[in-house]
Amino acid sequence: MELERLLKSKLTYSAPEPQRRSANMPDYAAEYARSLQDPEGFWGEQARHFHWFRPFGKVLEWNFPDHQWFVGGQTNITYNALDRHARGSKRNQVALIFLGEDGSEQKLTYGELLDRVSRFATGLRGLGLEKGDRAVIYMPLTLEGCIAMLACARLGAIHSVVYAGLGITALRERIQDAGAKLVIAGDVGFRRGKTVDLKSIVLQATEGLELDIIWFCRGGPKPEGPKTHDFNEILWGHKPETEAVPVDSEHPLFILYTSGSTGKPKGVVHVQGGFMVGTAYHLRSFFDLKDGEVFWTTSDIGWVVGHSYIVYAPLLEGITSILREGAPDYPNPGAIWSAVERYRVNVMFTAPTAVRMFMKFGSDWPAQHDLSSLRLIGVAGEPLNPEAWQWATEHLMDSGKFGFVADNWWQTELGAPTLGTPVVLEGRPGLVGMPLAGVDAVVVDADGLEVAPGTGGLLALKRPFPSMMRTVWGNHARYQQYWNEIPGQVYAAGDVASRTPEGYFSVLGRADDVLNVAGHRIGTADVESALVSHPSVAEAAVIGVPDLLKGEAIKAFVVLRTGKEKTDALREEIIHHVRLELGPIATPSELILLDKLPKTRSGKILRRLLKAQEMGKDPGDLSTLEE
Ligand code: AMP
Image (cartoon, rainbow, N blue to C red; front, top):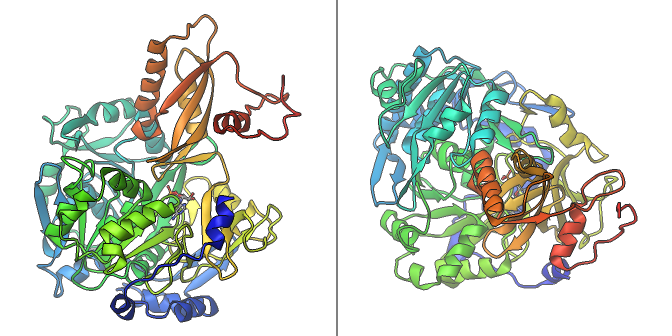
């Protein structure tokens, strides 16, 4: 079996000696031990690197399942990410570099970024956005998207970024669930040399809602309307006079929606203090960034990885962060490598699906560029298959002579790397690594009992850490469910995992009805409800099927309403409908029209059977099958 093979494999890899010697976290074992023996001392020390308007008292208040960190302290994440540097020695250091597919480039120094964020915050305040209010951001990956996030945080307002690739229903649901007062939106995005229309999605998603909309227009004039505003007028029409508003460390910083196994997206809430301390700590200790270095996270501000490692942690740590709009293989599969060479990128953070894509294009593309600045590539989002790991080590890191591939596992809920292989540890292809500071991870059965090494079980965390979510927006019971799902007061990650006797973890995939498509979590229930919202569809079931590039692809089975004919045109129309409702990432790559779905006698759809059939496997016990 694949799992056994991985766990028994003796194949290991190490970072080059000089890199290990100069690591920011030279002794993983000691660091880890201390973080568990004295979590308050450990995290308190990390937190004291930052500016607090009012110092915190107790480091941790753990009242199962609620946890508060840096209690009584007041801070503002943007003071630490911007003012501290702009008013100090880093005023003229580049904070953010934006790259366009067309080769365009825009840079902002810490001084310039602070100026813009403060101006935009003044504009937002003028529109009535105050501490605690929610603003939804539906922006392409641009400097303006980052400015919008930071300006909200500066006021103590709560941003909720919705990936500008999600469709109408997904956007509307999130705006309504968050109770947003304001939407900051782009009219278009640019991808593969084409303009992607966002305007019509925003207009339909906000129809009939009482909201201000700030438009960042690159495709045409600003849409008209009584409560519409122009991004650049809000920015440049206001003075940079808004100071960072002191907020409690537990004050919400953002809501980020993620799919669950029920149709309703969950609004994961992260707070200013803990998110700041946790994400910045891992930028230094796990991603091993040093002062003056350049970091490139190839994600998007629409995902947690973008929140933590495009925007907040790099700025908190005063380094330079790159963002690039568009497709990584456009205008050619060497675009990324040419930029790594040009900007002398030191550390990259990407996803296995991207590595597999680069692999498909072949090693000639990276070989044309000097990638010697690159000494670490972090990968997360889905299991990193050993072939992709090997290819990246060989072709991006000169067979490991000058670099290291660092797998890491975490989730929207956790904010920062949780399991992983820091550069001082020995890497094991196919295994994600060890628990990082503050993380007490176990693999348990459904009764909460630890399973033996080498056996598959549920991944669970026994205690909280600062960058972990505090609640699910408007649904604290849903938050409590994470901690009550498995007996024994542990946080249920929802993943299937296993560990070796030495304590290396392997994370195999989701334990629930959630798919992982190109590193993005997609709930089967979300796709199924989008399918049945088409007028010709009676019932639908969705499963994940293995996909060489994306990890998993979505396959849908649909029963049409009586009288509807199974035609290719209708099939295409249904697929298009899902694309419009949820967005391209949640669109089925295959849709089969059936007369009936397999169901249990009690009427539950047996996805398990569809999946087994698809994979040519034994479906298991079918005694409850209807017929
Ligand atoms: P998200 O919240 O969208 O970031 O998705 C988190 C999920 O992605 C986890 O629950 C895992 O199923 C999966 N995941 C993330 N990182 C890894 C990794 N390094 N190895 C295996 N699975 C991962």
